Length: 119
Image (tube, rainbow, N blue to C red):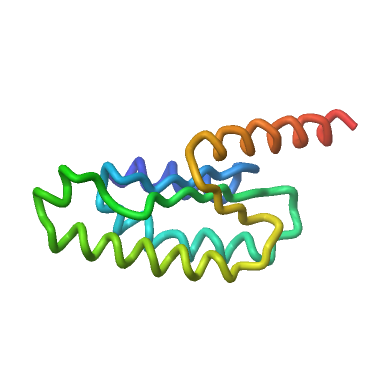
């Protein structure tokens, strides 16, 4: 597990586009907690780096059935993070409404980055 954490930390520091989906298939507490650290890094970043965030508003029905209390805590945490993200005023941090939108924005930003690199 430590190897994965080290690899993730490296990518968060070096990648030009960070995709940060928090889907309903997991409670997402770790990912939701990490959002603040990632955003704080990018708010003051003047480089051509972006964070694309997608947070589903709730966990799956299967997780609700498995542990209603955890599911409710996750739902509340997701609402809190989304409310805080709505107040982030940074062109480097983009909150998207779907995985499809995340893909489209990722393609657009990757194309822009490639054109900047060859200019």
